[in-house]
Image 1 (cartoon, helix red, strand yellow):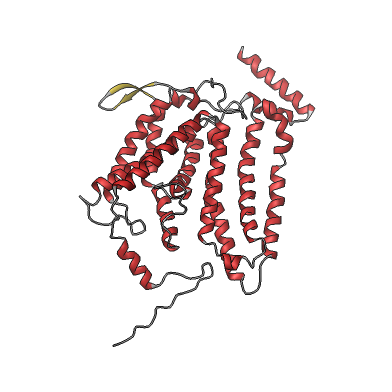
Image 2 (cartoon, rainbow, N blue to C red):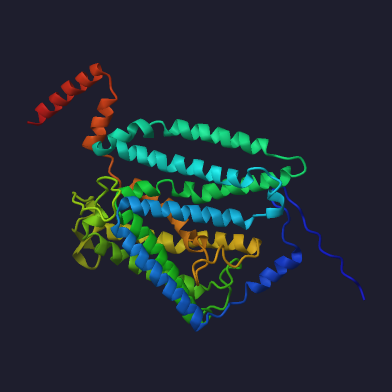
Length: 408
């Protein structure tokens, strides 16, 4: 009998080894199988999801600051889970400060992203102008931390391990881009109104829940073809059913949220104590009930945000799931079922937030492109005027007097 030669593994500059042909064939075979969902597994997943939903709803009542802080904690946990995928304790013990440098890259990026938002918020609210002496120097601080971290990373490179060290550094930096920079405008959107914190999250959750229950009840009963090799448990029925349910949800749910100023009004300040006072404001026109002439239906009272919600529903159904597919590819490449196991039935934080990270990018793009008003606030104008020389302030005063006089 002939003895087949072992399949050689190919080494690349950014990974220690790649999968062999045998492993790839095994993965391809697995992609056609669907793991049946037991009743116990469904119940555990449902109970955990219900507890997380209750916590999430309670978090909304604590105010904008605590919603932002919760995302900071979530990002920290996600970063930890992803970098640990490639953790190799035996080699990293020989690399001085390597784990510290991984977290240094993360901290520098977080200060840059959130510092810029905090500074902008302080300039637009007179109650926080006393903090500007700190926030206006954050860019300089971040830049200093950046080159210190970069230089230290280079100084820790050791002959014989440079390829491995570079691959780990690249993994850390890519993880920072995925976890931090995709959420650059998250805090700013939250401060513009809790609607922009809650609704995008809820839309992705609705899509995920709908895909799960549609998949386990109708999966492969109508379409036997595998949906995606990267996620063998995903089905066409789950994908299509989730899309329909999410579109319906994204049209009607904004009409409910638009009735509450707690969701539609922007933050008036950053309250340290949770459960701040009620918000009052003139809401964005998209939250105002408007008579809209619909084809074949005629005049109907609707909120414009309902039509904007459809765009969120489409993105959550057609694009955001690819964040989950990308996470599945990482787990498959490193033979992991989940990124962590502290949430029964759900795995780790990355397993729950993979689609949300991608949704954050769309939320920022859509808000600033189609929703945000370009009008300057009084506090913002006063801040800008305060940065001018006395001579220019006098000119501004005179010009404003002329414009106000022409309006009378």
